[in-house]
Length: 168
Length: 105
Picture 1: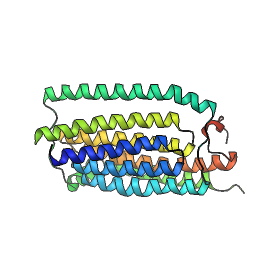
Picture 2: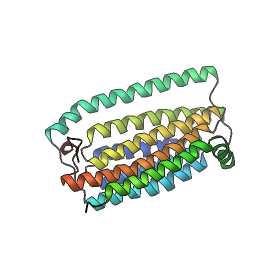
Picture 3: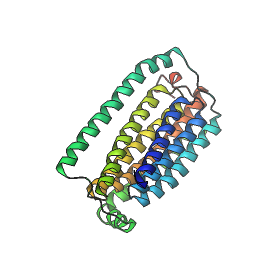
């Protein structure tokens, strides 16, 4: 086992533990903190896969901005421990086996197609790509979608303002 | 070196499948509307990991670029979704998804 493999297993265990803790914890603020753990672990995995800029964006935008927004709303609404009803027990009974089944299916088919990819010799062709290459691709080939996203964010800001204002 | 890179890519894609499955389970299982929303973010993150892993596998940057667009859409979605959650909480005095049983606010 070499260094990167050990780091991969550590980060993967951290991410999976955070995701399980998100499900098991009953207080929303605990779930939010678990989700932050998952996101930081994923940022480490991006570094391991050679995507430095994506890792930085993941920490700043996801771990920073979006999760702060979540924690802020949880505090604003004073959300307490979630209540369990008969319906939620039913959702657990039906949902957990189905979710487990879906996960196993996904893992099986992913592993299956990976072995096919190995046979075709596609993978492991990754070369180190710099942030500069990413910027060239984003601002030259994908400049139109990039401009469209600014419209999307503008619309989201206006929508959030309109929805959250108090009716007079 | 190639074998190690191969292992990292395969492991990342399998981990992304596992995280996506856990996100689906959380989406069905959780009763708090904010936590349900957080499990959507978990699923988006799992898909991002698959994008980055395949970007590495093919040696192309398009996958990383798609991650940016996913993050932008997730940020916009979080802003609008949390505004809707605040509105629902204000009108119904509850954050339980079972109380939200009609489209009318």
